Image (cartoon, rainbow, N blue to C red):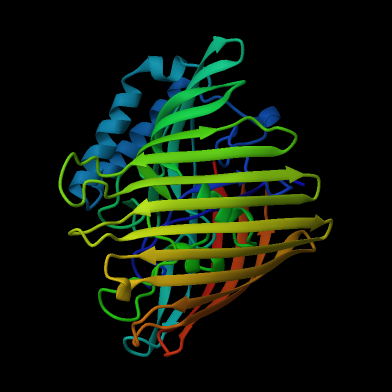
Length: 424
């Protein structure tokens, strides 16, 4: 089966125009292949970009960034691009590649809160996150290499950088490290295994617009001001982090990230942002499974806020039908136990071959337990979609998504999309 691409994000708002995160290559068994950067052609068809072409592409990007409305984002982008163009050594290094993807959709969104209404959209990230990146490596021999990647999210609907206004410029990935027979070790900003596990075992991957499991886990829908309804706290990538990915042992692989958080040396919130995030995955033949864990310190003003979460997921590919399921549990704890929150989330999904494309279905249910009477105790979401490849790198898609907060009733959101995604 040809590899498919799933892309995702973390949102801070309730609508599809908030922010969007990472993209990763998923092979036919549902396993993530991090030996290939996302959206590249298979090795046999992969092209190393020559210097004149790189210079023209990057100079064009530089001019676009300088014309953009965000002066600081444009300045950073221009300096980044100018540095690459001015350094022939960057392109002479082993395996340096420029790559990315663009995903834009048109559609309609309706909400019942804070006021009932609907709006027409031309937006980014209906199925995947738009981004541009540069990665490369240098061989030391004996299979050992130095590796690096710097990748930035884009919003093609407005031409802005980042997943949302104020997002870190290289939020998708920014690291340097080593890879070899021992595995892969990277330092910097790293995508987390918990996020990758979440996108692996649901049919809509990491779409923050129409994937029920992603929206229940990483997209916030507050029911009362100042109270988050986010299933799992923390971003889909950790800054100030170290990540290790083991080699595969007969299909079994370990992936772990540690973040130093905000790197404070004193105070009641000295450990704020510190986190450990890991996953153990297995994939062989038609079966793939993963178990993920996250523990993060979210302390603010000494409130003792922490969250612990775990998730198990699996996929079974029986030729024309791929069945997927996930279960997730999270527990938030505070010094004041009246603020504690527990969540349990279930997801069932299927991908069915239909013509030259795929029919997609996913249903997610979250039960939320806390002491706040105004907070919804239940969240229910369902999505239907169709994905049609036009070529190896371009596809068109359509999806319908319905999300409802209940007990007591909160916002009900419905989204319809028709979009185009191209990888380069």
